[in-house]
Each structure stands twice: as C-alpha cells, then as structure tokens.
Image (cartoon, rainbow, N blue to C red; front, side, top):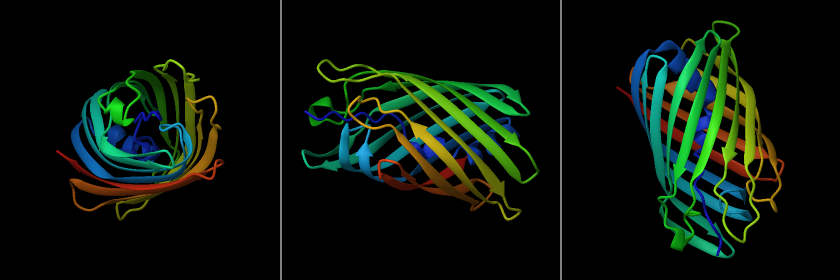
Length: 238
C-alpha cells in the first residue's frame, strides 16, 4: 500500500517573505486562508517518483503580540500509476513565539495529526513533530532577506525505510508602494523516504493586497528531481 502523509502545505512556508512582513508589523491579527496547490513529479508525501497532487487547503492563524498559533487541513487528490485517491488530509497545528523583532526571529513547534484516511492511503496513520526557526530582516525599506530551517521527527511505519528530515530555504523579497510583493528563494528538502532523492530547487512568489483585509498570493517552483509545483492562496484578516 502506498502511504500518503500531508506533512505541510508548501504555500505556507514558500510565502515566508510576505507573512513575515505582516507578522513583524502587526501586534494582533487573525487570518483565514484557502487556495489551490498543484505538484507534478516526485512526492515525498506519497513516497513515489511520479505523482500528481492537487489540494485545497484551509488555514487559520492567530497572532497576539509575540505569540501565534494556527491550524491547517485540506481536501486532496493524489494520482499515480499505483494509486488514485481523494479525500480529507491530515491536520497540522502549530505554536510560535517571536524571539526578536529586528531582525525578526521566530521559533515554531508544529505537529501533524493523522486525520486522513489511512485505508485510502491518504495518511501514514502516524504523527509527525517539527521544530522550525524563521528569520526575516529588512535590509532596506522595500527589500528583505529571509531564511528558515526545519527539523522533523517522522512517525515511522513498520516495513518502510523512513528517516527524520531537515529542510531549509533562503531568499529575498521586494515590496512595491502599490502593495505588491515579489520574491525568490533557494530551497532544500530532505526526503523522509530513504529511497527518494533529496530535493534542491528554486521558487518565485508574488503577492498583492486586494483590499485592506484581503490579499492574494501565488508561487511556482522547480527542483532537482524535475518536480514542478504551483499554487495560490487568498487570505482574509480580521
């Protein structure tokens, strides 16, 4: 049986330059987000080299001064030679604390609950726990650099070779006076399945405030395993 684990929504960490800018400038905010994500190629979540994944995520986050927390889940579809399923995925929750504000440094603890249907291969049926460190620094009024690193303790499945993983990104973002943002990053992701290759790639981003409370973000990426991905999110803040 092929096992699927929705370990994290790439949109969340690939749009870091924009989320950091907001979090660093606002002391209290609640956000609700949804969107669309598509990936074609190697899937570390499905454990296969030729997989198409589409999903519609739902994310909620709350920030109060230096403390923030949130939760996310999704409706997903996976399509591979030996697997074609769809349904609700796993649920991820996190809590984060801003250690400093200039530069902005945050530590985050994240946990994935296996709420997806293991019988349909939409979940590993195991919990994963991650610790992350995010960094954001505005080198000019409209230009920033950012980086993040994550170490994940993977719930191991009997009979499948799996390992704990490390992922990291580093990049830069630029903000326009119109409320638009663009950015680029270099990304590394270690596979939790020993038989799969680690992924080194690049991502580009764009973000635009539609109103005072609604924003739209999009990204695209490509990596060393010839895996391509793209997605978009729409976010409302309260």
